[in-house]
Image (cartoon, rainbow, N blue to C red; front, side):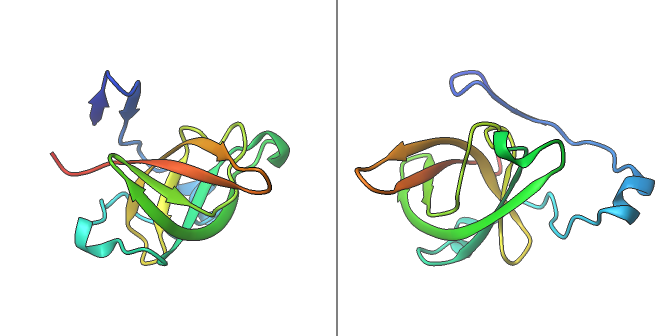
Amino acid sequence: TFVNKDKDIAVLHLVKNEEYYKKYPFPFTSSLCKDSDLKMGDKLIIAGYPAIGGFSMTLTDGIISGFDGDYIKTSAKLEHGNSGGGAYHYSGCFIGIPTSVSAGSLESLGRIFRIKSP
């Protein structure tokens, strides 16, 4: 378990429901990515429950667009409801938690709060 009161974030380790997992296998792990694993241009996957995704998990993909302090910028589509989901490197390791979208004049970039080992 990881808690950051300043960022209003908690990460919990949940026990896998075997029946659900057999029906909907999730191809990623809870292993944290090392900083050295993450480079601009790397592909990533966002898992969550966006407002337009209904009641089932939705995956979107993009790249690591840049780094900004505790945050990673991404081109992956984020929507209300993705916040609190997970961001995963294509290798399978866990990057962090989607938190917000910064809108430009034509496009937007998402922000992922980076979870690091204590």
